[in-house]
Length: 440
Image (cartoon, rainbow, N blue to C red):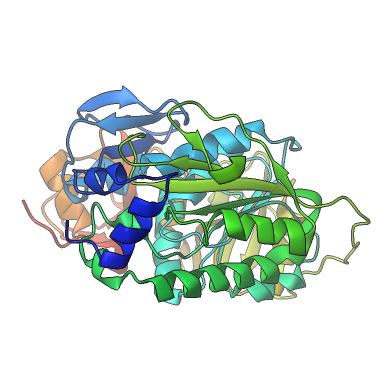
């Protein structure tokens, strides 16, 4: 079956999994997406809805997502169906109306965009990725999803001890041996070994231990992997219970998601669940006295009042504006203080919504504003068909009639980005590192 012999022996001897998992891992994985409820609905071949996640669907076949402008507009996110179980889990937790959530190992952004939809512009989401190149991808995907109560950081888990007892929920989709990747990535089979499983399990314990202090007493820790083995899953949950004093929380998930070994956590197992494979468990930190750390700010980030020029581009209700060097940032006023504290403690890649940058002749609006449906307030637009929209997304310029000035490019009514129209030509302001290279 083109699996490592040790993996075949391990799965075959595991009564919880059984050899039928090996058969399932050699079938085509399902294709699934999650819709952005605040943007244009794509025209795709939907099959069944995913019952453990709102606005989530299986597709009949995998399209060329790169050649769909609405994908680049953040209208939907292709995400593995099993990992969308997080939506059901979050909705069962006893949380405040505006929780502060950390997505610790967040790239490329599937779970972060899901959490952003769950929060609905309330509370705060800090999405972290330790690898710098992956943090840039995370920033792009979260920007396209279009919420202002989000921060992207590029830190090691141990750095979060600077934010003691700060988060109500920490989500850790821990780096793992990747057994759930075996269906779509044949190369991952060659990388698997029993030694690597042990290395991953030890790394996961370190990650959890390093970030534990950032979770407030009584807060929830959501642990997940895309593996099936006990060492990286149930045994690590027991480690959190025994070594960190956490309580395992029972979560009611729909069939065919099944409880883990000894009822610890839950699995989506290929062959039983339409998923590539996923494990998730919820723990609650013991109650205790919370540390009252003084929140700090950065001196070079200054509050500013909305003005006529800002309001020409952006709604200002419920938003605080700040100037950071030449950048104009929009932060939800109810979370601005918390977000400023995060900014002062971590290495930040994205912070709220970047409205634009101050230039000699006025504000140059930014891509983050164009993709934020809650903030964008600008009516100078040009609608493009699919072919022209793809040319725009490639960074091309072409003949385009319109008014002089900054203009929003749209496709099917959905904003894609900015141009600066010059009358007989235009400057394409779509970010260079986002531009697509694929052609039909």
